[in-house]
Length: 299
Length: 133
Image (cartoon, helix red, strand yellow):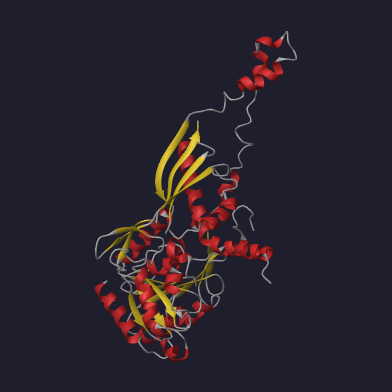
């Protein structure tokens, strides 16, 4: 691994087809650091050649005195150039946002309804997808981009439902960015008039800042987590449109207050819409399906 | 046992975890600065001025941590970094009152409504770059 920026073998972004199919690496937007290593500042510009001693008046007569004098007189002349200020006002995320807009344009042109699913690990993103694809696969065209640090396990699970899927392995990365989606889309080639699910890396912090070009962001919490998650990780809830509360079949056994969780979430983001469901029992799934049907029609 | 020494270690590792998306942010900053350096035909910047809103989702300590390693060998290696923190201001939808907010889930101090929108405080910008010529 490179000591400069942490890029290296373990940080390669890979795009894979499930079950050991096609696989290729991409040079991600944020980590293409090869070029930067070249600029090894040639020993700092400040090492000025103090040649002035020769022209000094004192040179011939006072061999000993002058050395002390000029080091003071001349040393500052050279480095004080003009101060130039570049006024930028540039959004640091502008590169990601620009590519996200490009992805967005692609979705619009092909009438693809794209959803970015975010949650902590283990709240049931993949299970919700599996059930959805199995139940609606005949009715609506789907495709899936899976994001995980390692393995194609999730893509393999989706692949079992016969829905086109690519896996993005982010290596050490904690989130998907719009460049990875761009490359994933090139491999996936989703059909027109379809729904694209992007399952982000399980992480309730980092993906919040990175738009992928999705139409809507869906945050998922499960009742086996704390009902105060929305105010513990407010950024994610603030940037989402839909909040799915999953595993409601377990409510009798856990100490999770749905009303309280919603109240917290609405404090963070009063635009949030809620869908309560259980991917295991199927409870509430119809509301989710109707939401998808409505959006693929109006999209 | 939690001693000050292993608390430090704990803090250190929590920063590594936290600094994952901050690392992406710093790399984004470096990319923009490198592009500007090319345009201005300079080899390094003396100063970079950032604007970071208090509710932008950035932990400054994590940014610091990522910064140290990410700027090495770049035009920002020897730059002074100035960060202007921007106070977050929210506006109440119900009564139009504007107030300083320190979290994303604060209610309006005037009418207690949670129907508030952030109008300032999620900035994440490079304001300026300085170099000598």
